[in-house]
Figure 1 (cartoon, rainbow, N blue to C red):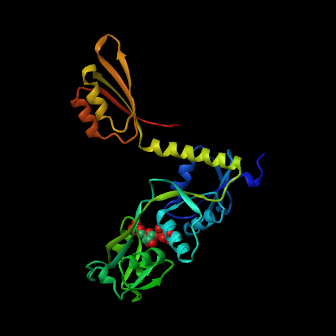
Figure 2 (tube, rainbow, N blue to C red):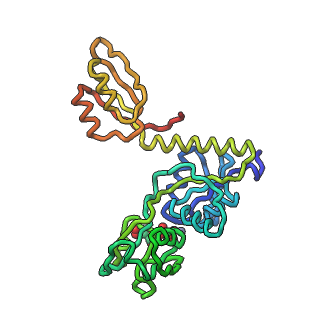
Figure 3 (cartoon, protein in one colour):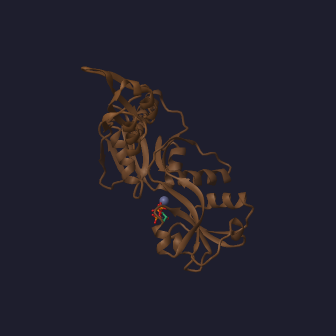
Length: 300
Ligand code: PRP
Ligand code: ZN
């Protein structure tokens, strides 16, 4: 029975746009959890890997301070914390492991509809409301602009209406929040998606082995999401052309077809999505009986 120190802790957003996707991703790596009554802790039932459900802004700190070994968090939060720590003369003690390809959003500057914007110079001397002081200051510095940054911990989008700011700098996903508040996006400071980060603190060998195992499974899950298994029949003479048309494949399997010397079956894993256009091009090259199947699991 593993003792407490040997269990791995993963920090995950408690209540927000990344929560469900993060837990789902870990479950697809074969982990099973029971959630505590207060819903702040998920106990790993089948492996010594537990989840700590916290505010997303706290995740980089928890991983840096080695309270958690791994964390799933938006690139936006990571970048903000990195710049904050840098301003305090401290390094961020975590590394990004993978982009997770969900939770896409951007950190943007927005202005009231009627306010003109002709580039960063329009920001000289204005007041900008944001929760992302680090990223905004970095952007202003790089553009040699002096502006007042008004810190808001939430509800940034109402600052202009309250007369507290001329612009805001906030996350935009669908754009619905900006629209509802009569604001328009004028510049993008940062593109973001969910990422997984790992502490820089050295782990005991058995713990590191477990982290490696879970990261390898995660890599498999991420690859599988885009991957397809494709099967088709083709004239032997068209094989080279067909091989070139298959997206993201290594060596396909080529099998002779019973009773037809000039035709073969081709099976291949495509590590990219297979679109209708690809199938149409394969057909035009002489392929027939095309079949595209989802891939369930993959281990490189
Ligand atoms: C962000 C941001 C906006 C909203 C924008 O908050 O502060 O309120 O999302 O999304 P939309 O473009 O789809 O309308 P979020 O829910 O991420 O909460 P947090 O910043 O407090 O973590
Ligand atoms: Zn947050």
